[in-house]
Image 1 (cartoon, rainbow, N blue to C red):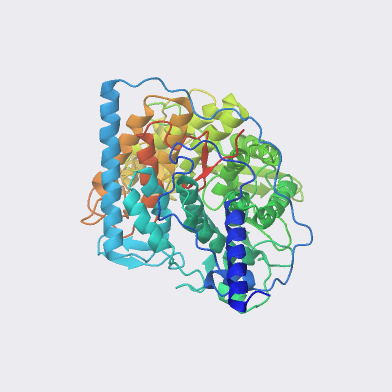
Image 2: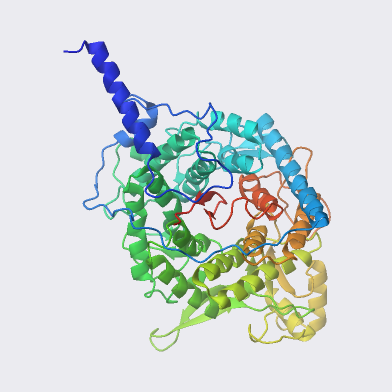
Amino acid sequence: MLPSRRRFLLALGLTALALFLYTSHTQWRPAPGSLRRPGAHPSYMTFEPKVVDDPEYFWRRLPTRYPVKSMRPLPTQRPRALPRVQATFGKETAQDRETRLRRQAAVKEAFERCWTSYKKYASPADELTPVSGGSRNTFGGWGATLVDSLDTLWIMGLHEEFREAVDAASKIDFTSSSLSEINVFETTIRYLGGFLAAYDLSGDQRLLRKAREVGDMLYVAFDTPNRMPITRWDFQNAMRGGDQVAPEWALVAEVGSLCMEFTRLSLITGDPKWFDATERIREVFEAQQGTTKLPGMWPISINPRDKRFDYDTTFGLGAMADSVFEYLPKMTALVGGLIPSYEGMYTRAMDAAMEHTLFRPMTPDGADILLAGTVHVREDKDGGRHHIPELEHQGQHLVCFAGGLFALGGRLTQNRAHLDAARKLTDGCVWAYKNMPLGIMPETFTTAACASKNSECSWDETAWRRGVLERAGETGAPLSRADEIASERRLPRGFTSIPDARYILRPEAVESVFVLYRATGRADLPDAAWAMFEAVQGHTRTGLANSALADVTLTSDTKSDSMESFWLGETLKYFYLVFSEPGLVSLDEYVFNTEAHPFRRLVR
């Protein structure tokens, strides 16, 4: 017999080999990367096998109260040959190249400045307070800005900074938190998504270890009687072995927008448990899609405990629902079309959205643009047997992602109507930026609407004034009062109200500019992005970084000392990519999650 020490070392070595092979396994090889050469792994990219008493194994050691009886298997067929997403770009002129690189350098400089300040004044906290030079924890205290920025560092070629950031991220302890309640959705898109994308780009195995660690933690939130997740999760209760049950009320985006991250983790590791978890959610969403009060779309809130989606009467592509629709075509791209249900769900959802949520705002210049509003469904007086959708003509900065949604979906499904909607929705957000005093779009606003979104619409001063009075609650006032209200509330012509005048460094407008540019090659879009960047950089820059604004209708300084992690993880990344060569993070090789983290697609 082998001496005990030799038996231990042999067992440890075999365990290390098994873990290495397990974590390196992928069902299908990813698309050829534009950022990482196969086998080009620097010496610091090492994989240290876990041992039994490793604290990172904690979440796996918890007993399961409601085990899965039949695991949904990962798709194993050869991926479909999906239509190309990116347009064919011609050779750029020397002048165009000089302009592009100058703009790209300006974005990179803005990022490096913010990153340096975050490291100096805030790390390892979640966020930097960019005016006062302090920090705050809003997403578990696990370094949200650090993890959200990993792939941006790699994409911008800041590889030494990336190595140092991975060193720091490797030390994050996901068994303790500064918060008593964890938002499972935010943790998934920021932390799990951030680690997965940085791994897909760089190949650093330490990032895969952290992704698995976060994935193991999040998987415990699904340990409920019906395997639906707890979206606002008391993970301390879970650590103590407490019972768990899915909530009776949850935001639809927080339940339905976990599939990209969970599926990618399963594809990389070969472990189907995460895929199984979100496949169960997809099956429920597909079954409920035709039962809601606006068939085809899911409402803002749902009941995961009873799997009922027919209570809420508010619908839209905007806040609290956005990413559940965003992930439909993105899942098709991610898995190479191997789950056809996503394409069908996308088509049904967008048919309903185009019919009920899109509208053409009435503008002084007659702009051919669209915005996506909010639908409130009311029941008729005849026993409530008929549902009547009523559209609120509201614009949201967050819903500006919809241009990119329709662009990606339109290319994948070869739907010209969706590509046309993508153009008009993106142009609508560009219009909203251009027509505000600072050149920056507010969080929310309302406009007067044209009678039809499909026909010419001339400016009607009287109709606009009536809209201003209605929004101000002064419907019976003389029309001249509308001019006073517009002046008092700093309303540009065309806008009837601005309920939320903040700008919180959001990415959605430039996100759609980026996706539409890559999908169509439209030459004016980089100029639109540059105008956005100059306005945002000019008005949000602080002595340390960039700050959210309290009111974009004021020309005075309204910085609110807040810089969410998505400024570095999303907004500046999209600006940078607009001014990069089209092959950098190609949309035919990668697909972005809702936090702008690019995952490698399964391709032939």
